[in-house]
Amino acid sequence: MSKSEKAHAQLTRRRWMVLAASAVTAGCGGGGTTGLAGLPGTGGTGVFAQGAISGFGSVIINAIKFDDTLAAVLLDGQSATSSDLRLGMVASVQGQRGSDASLGTANSIEVWSIAQGLVSAGRATPGGSGQFTLAGMTVLTDLNTVFEGYSAVLPVLPGQRVAVWGLQTGADARSWSATRVAMVSATAVVCTGLVSVVNSQRSVNGLLLSGDAARALAAGDLVRVRGTLSAIDGSLALQSVQYPSAPATNAQQGEAEIEGWVTSVAASSRFNLGTVVVDASQAVFDPASARVAAGSRVEVSGVWQSGVLKATKVKVQNVQEIETVEISGRIQEFTSLANFVVRGQPCDASGLSAVSNGKLTDLKLGVSVKLTGTKAGDVLKVTKLELA
Image (cartoon, rainbow, N blue to C red; front, side):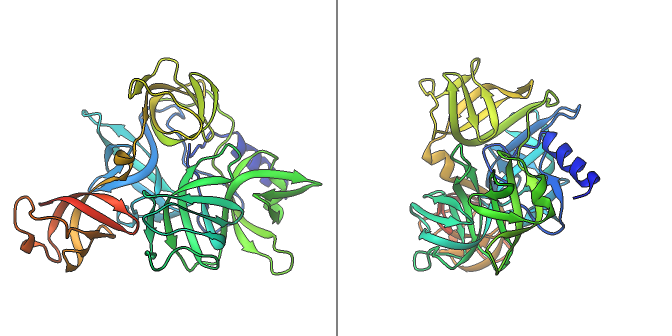
């Protein structure tokens, strides 16, 4: 590796580019070392939100509806549009808050998967709890995991090639909670975890790394690596490296809304969401009696102070909140009331006896609708529907 490449890698590690309690996954192409979504505060202000996408019409992250009309969108490092985003993808949004705290305008939206490759062990079925191993990572699924290409008769099994979006659940970064799992055909391998160095050999989650880019990795770094598996020794020949996190600095400014799993607790009012340090000493808890522990799924609102997220509110999420989805858009495909697609999401409204502003028989291809429902594996069970 050249001096300039080493300098670039060192600079990247010093930058603050957290994908909070979620992971990030390398997108595509190109070699070298790059960073991921930055938090507000290279001198600017605004709001930074990070969490699983829970709705469309405006992109909904952590109950904030972001107008994405003019947002620059990156999907695994590639330029995309908001119509390419899907439920359950973990997104980082930077923008401005609206006059209503539940509204905002997105300037940029970044989405990165956390893992990709062949499933080596385990099983996961839409609509239930499961677990599988991919690129040395343990991927957990539950009732709120969105599946694409899978069903009860076609579960995730060893030998299948998948991509995963999710949130970090363990301090060792080997365990992740999947918010979305999709069947893919791409052959590249993506792995997110902590770098281990033994006898000058680097590995992530037990996966040996090779290539010039590997030499710049330091023990303990949280990285997302992408490459191809060697047919000779099974090592991963790196094509790209991203740093989901780096040492905190004083540069961050502005508000933040971050969703994730508590990965460690340092004190009664201080805990970590992945790599984000949260100071909740002055926070209001919702519910008021709630106290966080490792394994709690929370949504933290606050402001950045000296590289720490100073929480103003800590909300412990419940199952109903996590599973509720809101989508506005046109019906893209329509087979029946039990089988139609809005914003790329298969929907089932067969449980409805009526709709607002019209009749059930009005539903057809091209009709604009606003619906609310709950995730059920690969399908959205519609509980309320309104014709726009």
